[in-house]
Length: 620
Image (cartoon, rainbow, N blue to C red; front, side, top):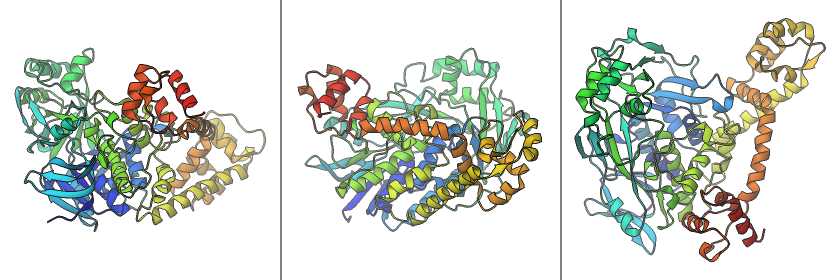
């Protein structure tokens, strides 16, 4: 009934969809298996993509040939660039999405791919032969052969949903949990644990009083995620902001005795940086209010997502408390918020390629690795899909370093440090974030994946080359063009910066903190005329490169120093035989199996003295 597939992807969430298209675009024949074809790429929680650091990841996924950025651009209803008041390393794109259109567009793009087949059923086991995965086994007892398998099970592995004192099996509201895979992996010897996440109630937008809330507009003009020619957003929708109060908090506390979080029924660790509303008012009891974002689920629905009000309290407590929030006095609830517990497998059991150490050709991606968020899942899926293709062809995997991408930071953190709580990406996790900006992901990453042979990247490569050349041309102009004091001094003094005493190159003005490209263009006709031949993306890139050149070069120098350790590869060593290593180092190095000295140096518990021992051992 089934051919032998190159790659089978289990699960069709954000990780699974990216894994499938990545492997297919590399040339593999792919089968995407999901329990429900109607929920492919469903936004299970918030109807948005991007955000702080997450927006950088979506740009990186797009630069590597993934589809998340394209789908977001085609289906978003609002776009905002966050952190504009900070430096460009912190700028983070975020889009409010049309939930139903997002899933429909993803499915259409998957179905349009000639190398992707589909099968709707639960996978409850793996077929293993000689230490390798050889396919999957379904609930109907069907065996589907494959050369590689990517598990992207999300919150479905033995998932349990909690609402107050009620609990029932499920991987998502209205959908059953997945069983069998956890039990088999444990029997093989994998470590596992439990994690918890949650979602807020959904509200009937027709019952809300928006006049009592703050309006949150999108950017004008709106930006986008993809580096391809996706359409510009038209007719942006507004979001709103409101706040809880002490009265709301008191009503929520009245249900704490029935909360699964506080009475011990939930054992899994929840996300530290996206806590439930009950967790927030318990941990931050000194705060008399918390911000809530009132976000539409799409253009053609009245359903509202109450961002910031995630809860597993009894539904009656959620409802009573919400009705005390300004603008929600007459609200009607579509469904209550809930918490969900699920199995995950500590990612220290994986290589940097996301292949498991115990089973060859088996890859894990997404929440099965202990992460939270669509964006974190999508990037892992993409890397796992590429490397599943690579491994069956005995080619080198794509390994992104911490200096290459936020994706490299995320995977490096997971593999070398593990995680005991749902992992979320932040700009603060990246030590080279001036290099890893959202505006240059195509320049950093598209050549890397094109060199592996991914299809349909010719136009992307050409566009990236043109963008880089344009930014360099603009930079050369600023170093070449001069400006006289009489033509600019009045403007300089108006903006609180010293007047010129003699003619200077234009670059000297741009480097002043009070001066930016837009201001110079407004008051220097020759510059405005020159820049009319360039689009805003290329102008912005040139400006950032010029204004932050010193900082960028400093980070590049740090990267060069670190890369010396990354280039020292470790052979297959028996660390237990190296007696001069600490006992903790021997245990951690044996379990994680680092590829390089650089990776070994980032493992928790491996000291500088241990690194010195390893350097001596490999002849350095």
